[in-house]
Every structure is written in structure tokens, then in C-alpha cells.
Amino acid sequence: MLKPSYRARGRPASDAVSRLCAYVYVVLAIALAGCSVLPTDSTLPLGAYAPRPESVTLANPEQTKLGKRIEPRVREHPGMSGFRLIPNGVACFQARMEMAALAEKTLDVQYFAIQSDDTGRLFIEGLVDAADRGVRVRILLDDSNAVGRDAEIGALTAHPNIELRVFNPFSYRGPLEFMRAAEFVLNERRLNYRMHNKLFVVDNEIALIGGRNIGDAYFAASQAMEFGDYDLLIAGTMVRRLSGSFDAFWNSPLAIPLQNLVVFKPTKERLDAYRESLRSHHAKMEGGVYTRPAREGGPVANILSGKRPLIWARAEAIYDSPEKAKVESGEQAGKQLRERVERAAEAVRSELLLASPYLVPGDDGMKLLTGLRMRNVRVRILTNSLQSTDAPITFAAYGRYRVPLLEAGIELYEVRPQLGAPNVPGGGSLKSSSSTPFALHAKVFVFDRRQVFIGSMNFDERSDKLNTELGVLIDSPELAREIVERFEAVAQPVNSYVLALGPPGATGKPTLRWRTEENGTAIVYDKEPRVDLWRRFKVDALSLLPIESQL
Image 1 (spheres, rainbow, N blue to C red):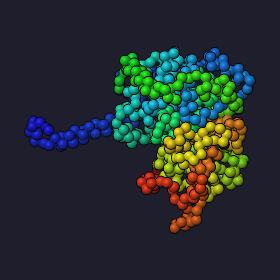
Image 2 (image 1 turned 120 degrees about the horizontal axis):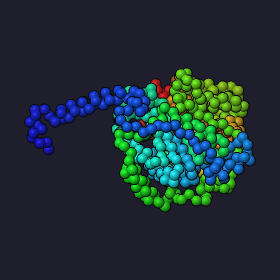
Image 3 (image 1 turned 90 degrees about the horizontal axis):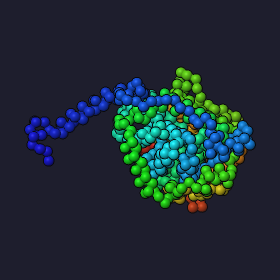
């Protein structure tokens, strides 16, 4: 009940609130209009700034405990590096915890997203534990998914051994998503440019790359979705080159210390409070697969002991320049990952296998793929179905390419969310949970079953032009064979829809058919299978938007 004095002013309270809201929105609009430049020491009006010194990776990794174990093997394989796939989500999380526990001198962490969920908090705890032992920890995060998290994660920068930088940050740091949306609209050209790299390096001796971010869905800890992906453990000279890519991004003008962005000062008290919340969370998770101590028998321990020996091969680290946007526009020289991958694809003689969860080839991609078919190269592509995708808006853009791809003779497979046969003939499983919906998240190319690309790059317009990406190109028939086994296990009809062209529809254009296997019976669908009307309507509506270049 409003007090009488409020009513005595002669204007309804709701009118006063409306005027106040209008005033606030005007102020916010003016404030956000000033966010059109990168927030740096010279543009942020906070008064006190953290220093931003350049730093580089560990110079003498061979002197660490890890180095003493690995370098003798490196000398036995001159010009090569060691590789091992870790395809299981739980094992990939355990690998990160093992690696963090092994760190002696340095730990470099670069991710598009670190979620503040169960596995994300355990991951952060592992980094803090390493810093407490005296390890220098550098964390580089993209800012596209950081809504409302700085208040907690920002406390890490009070630790003397932890540095945290944010790539191409938003100016607004609070929890209101509409504010970030407004800032994006006002400054779309800068803020649309994102760092999509994924890299985890310990003592400049071993590294982990692939397509995974940090969060429950990536490590089979979510009930809503399990992302199928690869992590690649790397040892040897390739690690130095990957560390060089980290240093390039870390020392880029686009990487801003987080304490220069938050509206509070990171203090020991804030850090202690965050530590306590991490400990409480760990206690809640105690006894599960994600909190088991790193002992003999873990994925990294088995690789280092030789129980799962490294595959030694020649390889190339490839990554976009931190200023890829300027390289793309011709403003400066630099590296572009997709150009190198496309050259490898153009050199294929017999077969190209491609797995990408988000598939929007664009004109250049279609030219590449159809050019291969004109040379009678077999092209097989694995992507998500409309049922399994977590990005309907990207699927809407992909939809218009399906008929042209099939008309060119390209084989197209769309993963189902429930796998009928999750086991891999060569050993292992495609997923950890039998009930959680499955979605493809791996970004892999196999060239003539001899050369492999694994990394963060999707085969879409965003990875091509708007995101920076990272990966490795490896000459290894053995590694290629392992990936092909998993590709073919996912692509079989019991796990995926095998697409084909149907007879012409009312418009005279070919229609689509989805061939699959359910309960031991072969089935052919003549419309998008097992999709509710709302999801189908949403994708049809999204397909009308002229935003393919953003996807």
C-alpha cells in the first residue's frame, strides 16, 4: 500500500516510475555511446590500473620434472612431436586436473568460455591450487560469455601468482544482459570479433588443444546435453610453437587485465571468500568422478608412463593472428588458419572427411568442396541434426546448403541426439552417459587418411572471418585411422541420419530424405525427423534473416 504522501504530489506513482526509467535509459544510452573504443588504461575512468607487462612462456622447460621425463623421448624422435587423443568427456576433465597438478613453473590457459558450473568451479580450483604451489598462472578469456562472472573470477587477480586478461572486452561488466546487448548494437564492428582458441599448456612441455570450452556440457557432467569432442595431448617441440601463439595473444593490445575492467578492487578478502566457496563446492562434489585425486591410471599418467604411448609425427601449429580482423581487411600482414587448412584440402587426392558441429560453408567453402568432387575426391561431412544442435540459428543457415552439397555428390551425415550404438569398434565409447542427449562438437579434418587437422575451427563463416582460431596439422596415418574409426562409428545409420535427395517437390526442386535405423529397423523420413513444430517454425523463420555472414 502506498503512503498518502506519495499520492499527494498530484501524479500517479506509476507515472513517476516511468519518468525515472526513461531518465535511466537516457543515461545508459549516453554512457554506452562512449563504449565504442576498446577499454584500455587510457580510456577507462577508474583512476588506478594494473600494470600490463609483456610476459613469455617458460624458457627452459627441459629443466622441470616434466621436461626430464619427456625430453629424452623427444631426442629419440628428431623433428617430431608426440600426440595422443583423449575423446571421452570425463577423461578430458581429469586430464586437465592431472596437468594442473603436475605444473611446476607455469600454467597457461586460453579459452573462449569458462562456465561457473560444477566442472568450471573445480577447474578454477585446480588453477588456484597450482598458483598456491608457486606456479605462475596466466588465464586468457574471451569476453563473449562473461556476463555477471567478473565479481567472482575477478578475485583471482588478487593472487600474486595469477594473472587474468580478457580479450576484446565489453565495457559494461555487470549482470544485466540487455546492457551488454545495447553495447553490442552500438559497437558491433569491434565486439563481433571474438577469440575462439582453446589451449592448456603446462611448463611449456605438454599441451591440450581441441574444441572443448570449460563447462559441464563439455565434460559429460550435464543432464541437458553432452558435447562429443576430441582433446589432443601434445608433447615435444610443437608445445613451444603453441606457447608462442599464447604469448602473441597474451601480449596483444586486445588482451586487457581484468582488474582494469571490474568496478571493485580485487583484495585478499575477496580472494579468500572465493576460495571458501570453491572449497564448499568441492566438498559437495566429493566422491564423484570429477574429484578423484590425480593418481596412476589417469589419462595423462597413462600417457606419460607409456601405457598409452604417444604417437610421434611431424606437425604444424596453425593459428590466426590476434589482429585477424585487420589481417582480413588487409590493414596488416598476419596469419589466417583457414587458408592453411584449405590448402591442405585442395591437395587431397582421394578422400576428405570433415566433422563440424556448425556447418555454413559460404561461397568459398562450396567452391572448395565442389572443386574436390569435380576431381572425383570423396567428400564426407558429419554435422548436427536439427534435433541435436544447440544453435538453431546456425542450423537455419546450414539448411540451404544441404541440397547443393548432395547434388555435388558429397556425403552428408547428421548426428542424432540419442545414439543407438555408442561403442567404437576400435575401442572406447562415443559418449559417457546413456541418457543425456548427444551433440557433435568436434572440429576435425582428415586428408587422405594420412593428415589430420584438430582444433577450434568450425567450417562456418564465423570461424572464417569473425573468430580467431587455433589448431594443429599432423602427418600421421595412425592418428588419422583412430579418428576415421570414430567418424564412421558416429556416421552409421544407427547413430546419424544419412541424407539423400528425394524426388522434386511442388517447386520443382529436389527434396530431402533422411535414412536411419531405429530398433533394428531401417527407416526413411521424408521430412525433418522427430522435430516439434515450434523448433521447425523457429528455424524456418531464422532462415529468412540476412545474417549468414555472422554465423
